[in-house]
Length: 354
Image 1 (cartoon, rainbow, N blue to C red):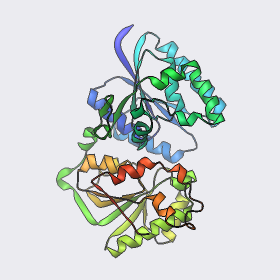
Image 2 (cartoon, rainbow, N blue to C red; image 1 turned 135 degrees about the vertical axis):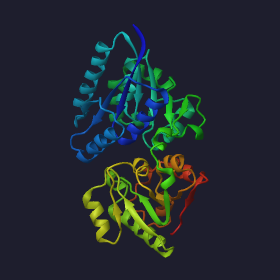
Image 3 (spheres, rainbow, N blue to C red; image 1 turned 180 degrees about the vertical axis):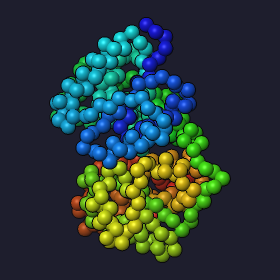
Image 4 (tube, rainbow, N blue to C red; image 1 turned 30 degrees about the vertical axis):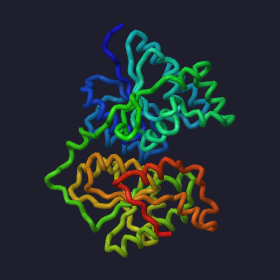
């Protein structure tokens, strides 16, 4: 067996690539295997991945197209594990995992128990995973396996290793390391990404506000009408303060959704990259960012310190303030960690307009 550790990275979004790129430069990793987990029908998201790879000058990667049907996906992922077992049998490995909720990521921990693992950020979910599970010494998202479907998946992917995986600590490489109490957390301060910023030329525009778009409509948590109602109120709120607001679409935002906003008087923007990357390439940056809770509240603070003010709209509070307003709102799909984090952060101001 060779003493050199083989780093095997997984990525399914530009945010994952940001974390991987930071880890590569922090540890001066020269050799690695990068595996992209992509969906063929998410063409816009796939294109964003390729753009990010070019920006970071990452040329060597392998694409795995994820099957839509779960049982086919299971055998597909099992075949990947078998290939790893055969090809890298004699080599010490470190797997860089991307999503605490991803059952395949944890299945790798089952079959490669003598190798190393580290979890990178998947948006705000790293913070949620720490608070809900890892802070309690639970290293699997056990609530996901309470349903019949979850139970079957647990048996298929974990076999008799469930308790071992549940009790085995997992290392983290996260932008939230300085805000959580976790001895296994390593700080990702986005130092390499920060080097791309043209500091001397930066202009922060006090008259401009970005609202960080969500995929809550696409996930079925909100109806379009509910999201538009809030965004429209925010637009009026900022207009009264003499500021211009833009709704910034996410990767999952459809063209039709953004067009509906435009037709109803909401200015929109849709970048090909996450704002973390976009803001390192432009010199005029909005001084105000509104969200329903977002990784941007932390990542942009690391990049620009206190030059951007963040604002939070508490969806649960908003809809609970009116019985009629919240009839179809699925509050159970909004994690309480979102509001707790925002309310306890000194650079985030809560907006009340209801």
